[in-house]
View (cartoon, rainbow, N blue to C red):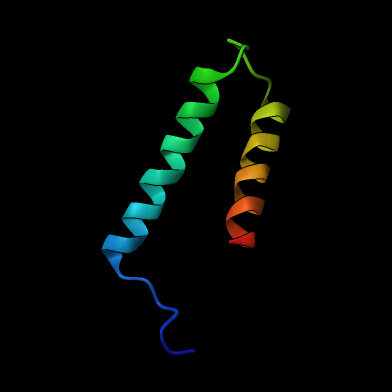
Length: 53
């Protein structure tokens, strides 16, 4: 599977963009507190969206 490997810099970029997405979800949402289940659901949504790209 040549061409599918990511460089360390690319992996870091994906990591930081994912963290930023989470930050936006939490800061732009109406809620100020989240349960563990709600956080897991948000993480699942992000992971699913990234898999579809």
